[in-house]
Length: 145
Image (cartoon, rainbow, N blue to C red; front, side, top):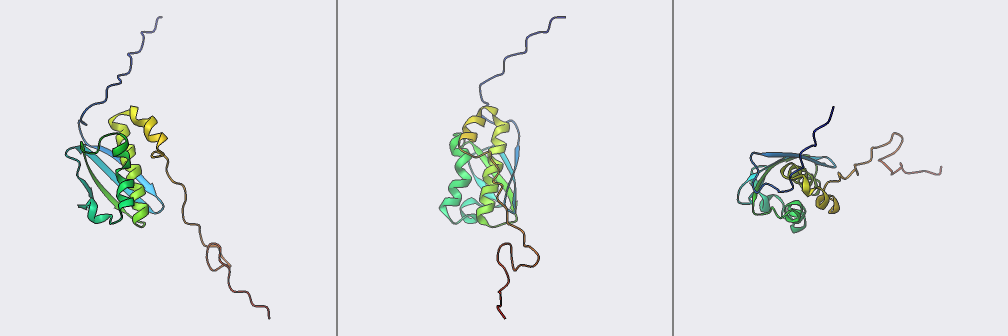
């Protein structure tokens, strides 16, 4: 029995996604559900403008990082729903969600996204409070007598 050779994988990336690409991102307590589709490059976060939702430029740059790295900034519309956490955690969750959705568009983006550190989920979480203590690390005040 002779096996037929497998067809060679195609290396050309599609110019436009055929449907909606979905990615989920998490950071700290924030969870983001990201949807990408062909468009003009508008970014909506919880049905609000991207610039209104993130007032700090550093957070806006973090969210745009996967699109800039893959040269898809003006070609895709991003709409995401994010809840939980603060603004920094939400921006990190959206960044991971966009990077994961871009992998569905073209798996050839994986090396560049991996090199940029955009596919690694940040494992740092809030440390739990321990019993017999005031917080995670802080102790109750010690009295000598």
